Length: 102
Image (tube, rainbow, N blue to C red):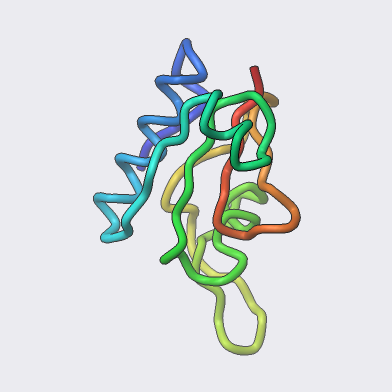
């Protein structure tokens, strides 16, 4: 498990997050600030992962596992630690994008 909060740069954190998602078997794309702004996610680094389970990014941002049980009970430790850093947020209208502030 990686801890995104350990990275000194936002670009490094975004790239490490995408790499961790790829190790878990997902296709993840890092969006540069310019590309993220063009896509409407603000002017910061972002990670796009359309294969992740529904609510996956939001669950990770809450310190939960990205996988939820069918009855809505979340069990397990997070696959990627996003806690302890205030420069990222889950895009509320798209569960598959994690945005990192500038």
